[in-house]
Amino acid sequence: MKSNMRHLQKLLLQEPIIDKDFMENLRHQFFDEVDDMINSTDDLAECFATWTSGRFENKMGSSIQKSMEYLRESLAKLNKSDLPEKLKNIQEYLQLCVDRHFTQACLDLMTPNGPNTTLEQLRAWKQQVLLIMDGYDKVNQALVEKLEELQFYIKFRCF
Image 1 (cartoon, rainbow, N blue to C red):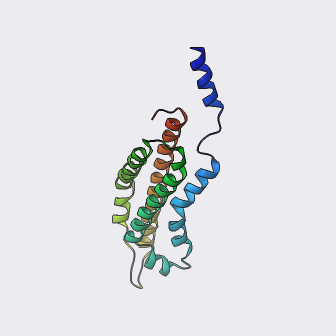
Image 2: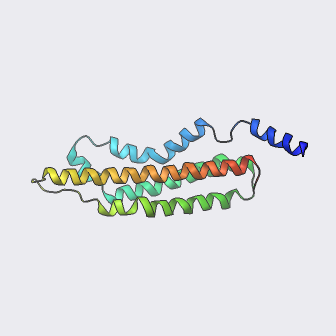
Image 3: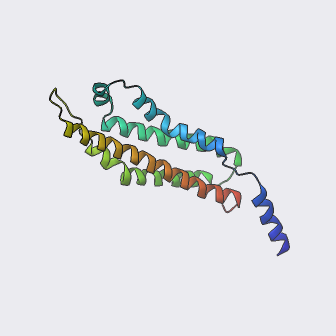
């Protein structure tokens, strides 16, 4: 029993596998493309032209792909046999989160068009874009939570 407790104590004293820099890099992998798309527009007309539901969906797909590639590359050195399966499960879970929190918001995005855009149309569009960004945050939060679970498994050698 004492040897098991000592082993557990050693594990608890180790540095975390996933540190602040790792999480910041992962955040950049996830958000950079959509941030660039948003930051590249200077006026409302450009927003209407470029912030389309299809473009947001493409950016989300790219965000997940880049994040998963970063995880695969970063965690490959651990040489854990179950790691590819765990990462595949995380990617599948993220897709479920996209379906639950993001896809409908993209489908609902209606860009005002024409010279007679009303204040009500602008408010509705703004609300829809905010829902899309909220979906982005929820999918990212799901990624972080799954990564924390993975860290626990790695740290305590449960897989």
